[in-house]
Image (cartoon, rainbow, N blue to C red):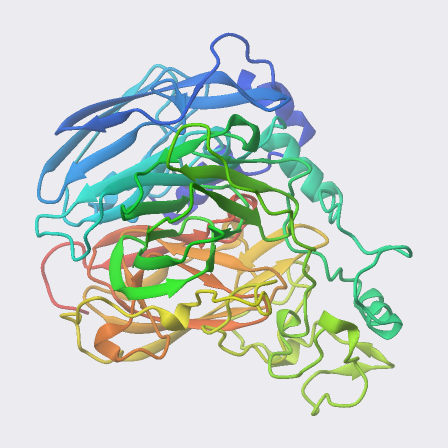
Length: 582
C-alpha cells in the first residue's frame, strides 16, 4: 500500500470526525442511538491455540451514566487472553458491529501484517466480515489488546497475559489483572468536536478570580500573557469520564480477595483513551517487578504514575483487613477504586481526591530554571539566563529559531521548548512532594542483561509538536495527513532516538512491533525495555532501538485524540527479507 493510500485510508477511518457532514454517516453507536444488550462488566478468560473474538455494538452503564459501548464477547473490557510462551495462536475476529474494526496486540512481537492497524498493516474488518490473525507467541509478560479504530474508547480492549516457559523470578500466591480505563456516555465523535471547538472545554479546574490555587498575582499574569492555563493537565476530565477498574466504576464495589499472609501480584494495565493515573494502595507498599511486560529488578514504592498504554506488575503483601486500590487521574478530577480485601464486604477508607496540581516552568520547556508555580514563590522576573525569550515583558513561547530545519513551522505549532531537559527521574506532575516514595523511570533496571551490546550508530531526533488552541498534534510540525515519507530504519540498525516535547502535555509514545531501551542512567546492558514511553511536558527523552522487526509499524502518541488529530507516523524497517542491513 502506498504512503498516500495509507494516509487516505487512515484519514477515512479516523480523521475529520468533527465535520458536521459526517454525522449522518456515523454508526449507530457513535450517535448514541444504540439499544438492546447491555455489556457485562469484567472479562471472561480465553486460552488455547484457536480463539474467537466477536465485536458488537452494545450499551454500557456505570453509576448514573448510560451510553454506547462496544463489547467483545459480550463484556467490557473484552476477554482476558491468557497464553503460553512458545505456543501458536489463531484468532478469528468476527465483526458483528456496525463499523470497521481491528485488533492490535499491544506490545507483542508479531509479523507486521498481523499488527492490526487499519491503513498501515491491514484493512479494517468491515461489518459482517471475519478476519483471521495467526502468529507464534515469542515472549511472556503482561500486555493488552485493543481496536485501532474509534471503537477503542467505547470498550473494545482487554488484557493479555503470556505465561513464561521458564519459572517466574518472583513467588506469589494470587494473580490479578487491574485494568484501568475511562469511559464516557458521550461518543468519541462528540468529544473530538468539542476539543476542536473550545480549548479546555472539559477542564473544570481552570483558574478564576476566586480560586485558592497557591499562585502569586505575578504568576497569574504571566500565565495570562502566555495564553496558557497552569491547570491544563488532561484534555478530557472526570466531569465527562467515569474511571473504571476492570470495567467497574467506583460505585460497583469491585473486590480482589486475599488471605492474610499471602503475596498478591497485581497486573496494572492502563487501557484508557486519555487518562494518566496515579496508583497507590494506602497502608501497603508495592514492589514493582515488571514494566511493559519485561521483568525489572524489584523496586519498592508507595505510588506510581502509569501513562496511557503502559503496564506495571507489582507484588503486595497486604496486612490490614482491607486496602483501597486507588487510581487517581493526574488532574485529580476523579478516580477508579477497588478493594483488596480479606473477606467479602470488608472495606478500607478511600482517600479524598487531592488538590489539582499546577504546571511549572519545566512543563513549559524551561527545565532547569526554577520558576515553579508551586508554592507561589518564584516569578518570571530575574533569572532567565538568556534562555527564555522575553519580548516586551511577555514570554515568547514560539521561538522557532531554536528548531532544526526538519521541523515544519506553521499553524500546527504554538510552542517551542527553550530548554527541554531529560526528566527520567521525574515522578510525574503532582507527585514531586507527596511525602512518600514514588516510582520514576530512572529506577527501572532490566532484570537480566541484554544480549544486544552494540552502541547506536546514529541519533534520530523527533519533535513532538502541537497547537493547543486548534487541537492540532504532530511530529516535527506535520500531522500525519501531511507526511509524505515514513521514518526509515535499516534492518538490524542500532539507533538512538531522541524525542523533544515542544508541548505542555505529557505524551505516551508507543512504537509497534518492537521493544526499545530507555536511556535512563542504567548500564547499557541493563536499560529497561519498554514499548511505550512518556515524554514529560517541555522535556526530552531518549531510547535505544534495534530495528530487528521488518515491515511498517505505527509510531504514535497513545492519547487517543492526539493520535487521531495527527501525532502519528509510520516507521519502516527494510529490507523486508534477507540481504544486509543497508
